[in-house]
Length: 26
Image (cartoon, rainbow, N blue to C red; front, side):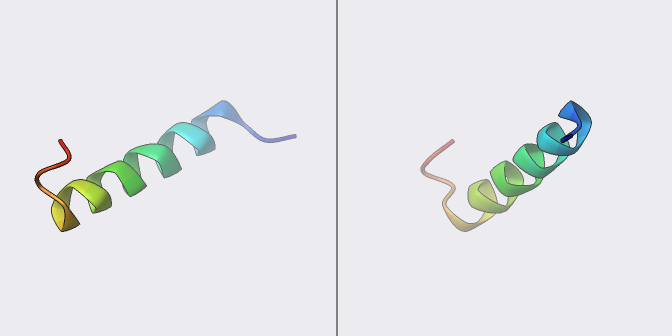
């Protein structure tokens, strides 16, 4: 069973990483 917290943390991590790589796509 996947916990919702892990999904949120991973989503936020990739979102921050993507925002750092592509500032245009905010």
